[in-house]
Length: 171
Length: 171
Image (tube, rainbow over all chains, first blue to last red; front, side):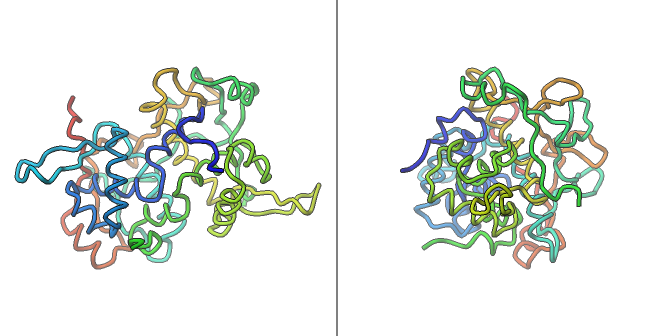
């Protein structure tokens, strides 16, 4: 039993994970943000096995997150570059990196900082905000069925849900 | 060759992915936000195989993203609830969901909307902002070695990097 296929679920998170889930995809995308373009650069900098890297690069090209270009210096060596769809993952990469800084890399501090070049200071954690730009608390957020909801999703969100908070939220 | 272990990398993204990467973990966390607490609720709502679900729940408890509680109604059935560490993944879940809305679920629109309860309108996409709250463009962001950088990371970010944009960014 392999379970339901992510790409068939009526859920944008599931479909996003069907394209960039898996242990390596977001790290390959991080490397692309950091300037890696050739297979060997990804291979050396990530320490990922060649066959796994090849399969993940193919899949990311297939889903339009990376594009494969012919290198001008050497036509036999393709370049892999972020498409607009791929570049648009920067908030995902940043928010997950900040979460790792806050909850995992806590002894020595952040290995890498995202810095606001003009202010010369670290960028604060990515937060959810209202349309007017104010940070919003989880209990002011509701989940509603959207225009692309199927019958099952509509049933589930007939009454809007509020994201459940941690048991220890008030600690 | 399994490649380098994610949890040993000098990178908060890699370490975050060692805890919540993989195809299912963020969907289990989404379910926890949506109010699922018992094994069978996760099983039915995600359509995930029982053995995989059990392994992922154990791992999420192990890393402190979920806590396992004894149910008051039935002491043999544990509850799984988000800890503060787990709740703190809401911006990650939201940004990946919004990315899926923008790039994958484009025919019919978003299956589920995050709504600002007070304004009664959908929350805009999660963006990276400066400390003063203004959205920041990728080319105004620099990557610097942080306090937890090891020697290799320090060498790589001796000159700060700017996240590489898509080839087609200007289209």
